[in-house]
Image (tube, rainbow, N blue to C red):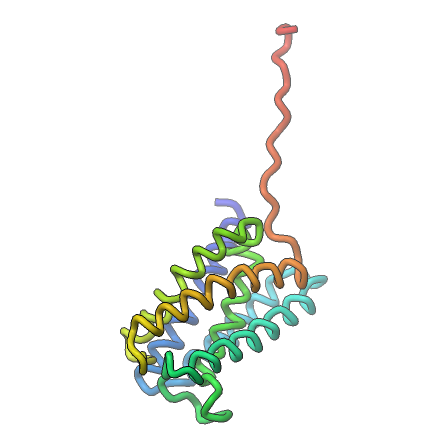
Length: 196
């Protein structure tokens, strides 16, 4: 496997580790586990990328955090999801730190393991509409959240939100940070010697 391929797998695995740490930590009274793991993953990510793009990448992580807090506040305001308690930081209408930590960590994938979605906005919308409810539903099933208005209402709203959010975040990362991993350019076809 190439160095780039290994990096893409590490990038995706890091997000999964943070997701599991955040969700299981929240479900088992350890709300600091997610933010601590996210901080480590984001720090390693920023250290790994090219120095010339670090400032832009940090800006993208901040955008994703703000965007995510707004999305989760909206879901909470409409009673579509209720999260397990966090660290007790911030107002009640704001998602807990363990949930907030997932947004910038997710943003680390947008130019790397999920960078291909930037060239395919329709795929990003479908992927978001499917993966968003699965992720939130997984969190509910593990005890980190619940559906105050029922699973159907919550998952439908999250599917709609993520069908817009993923293409939007992918596009934002494209204009904020760096181009996605370039697709390989095929070698030109050369005629065989003596065939012409």
